[in-house]
Length: 108
Image 1 (tube, rainbow, N blue to C red):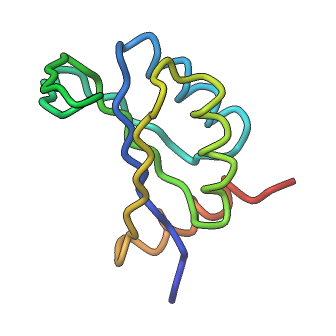
Image 2: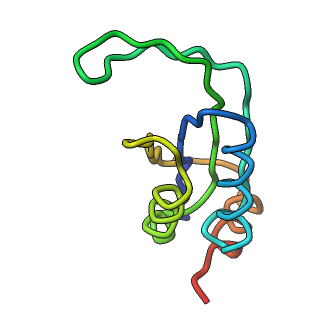
């Protein structure tokens, strides 16, 4: 069965920022669940220069149908000019869990 579930990756500047975004995503039913993973060290190019930052990873479980709402909320609350919002398909998993993701993120 195709559940249309996705995992969204977003790096945040702090645990507080990740918590604020995760809470909004969950309260607004754009996400079924969010996990906050501290301890990232990122190396990337920004505005033509090599940059390094300590960041926090926000993992968001949602659906393709709700991804537009996820993007809107992240853009509104994120401090970065260009926040990461990468949706990876969940190709398989527990049927009960995937059904729960779909049920939690249905637009009302």
